[in-house]
Image 1 (tube, one colour):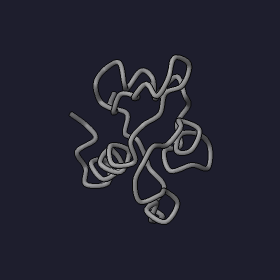
Image 2 (image 1 turned 180 degrees about the vertical axis):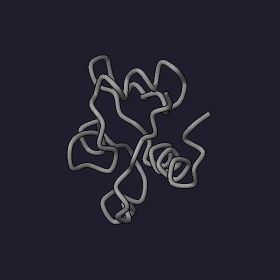
Image 3 (image 1 turned 120 degrees about the horizontal axis):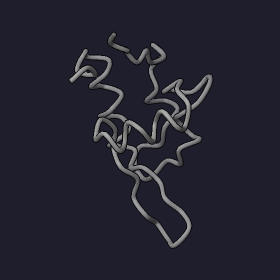
Image 4 (image 1 turned 135 degrees about the vertical axis):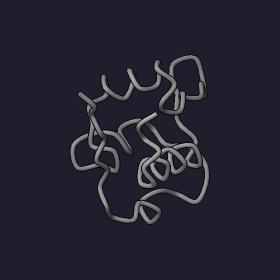
Length: 82
């Protein structure tokens, strides 16, 4: 059985900054641009289906805005099931 990730249809470009980094809680979770659990997101990162975080310091990591936008666009175009 195939699972398909359903992303919110609203335009997320207004919600994110033009550049820089996003923390996971900024875009993953109930009511967010990617409505899945953190554990599902991390499983997708391990399976290389989602972008990996970038270490900003010894105890903080974030995701580039560009990589998150590209991930969302790939699912909206139907490239989510590989």
